[in-house]
Length: 225
Image (cartoon, rainbow, N blue to C red; front, side):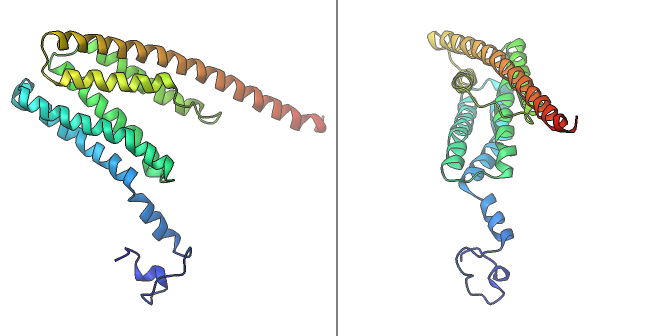
């Protein structure tokens, strides 16, 4: 009932000594941890959210309420999976790849669907998605020089985006409809400002990395000269 195959215990069926499980068994177990399961749930919720949102032409309040529930669950799992992975040392290669994909997928699905329904201007969707894709590519561009950490502004941006998209998913009228407009406006401003800050950090990080590489090369060439 432990989930450890007999082959991992020497084929006798008896548990192996503590700390001597095969590496393959350990890696297999580490993949199915709670953090990765939450990430997988978020990935599965993406198509489900879109289907719910677009039911009956995409303007039925009941279906949109269900879509909001799916979106809310996805946002909540986004908060907890990373925290659990870091706190309980559950970080895996799968999680490193799947978590950011799930984050971008649910947000892109919401923005594109809302714009397709005519509820959100396409330029808003374009600005947000261009920023997210651009920053992701830029992180890979400078990754050999270092990692750009998530900033407080970036976390505020994510919260604002999630809140704004969630409010647009719901069928709101009156003051709440006005409020969601301003929440989205704040989200767009934070998206642009934090994006520019990440660009600045990337440029500084790359320059510093190149300078260190040149200094190291000069130091190695010095004695030979």
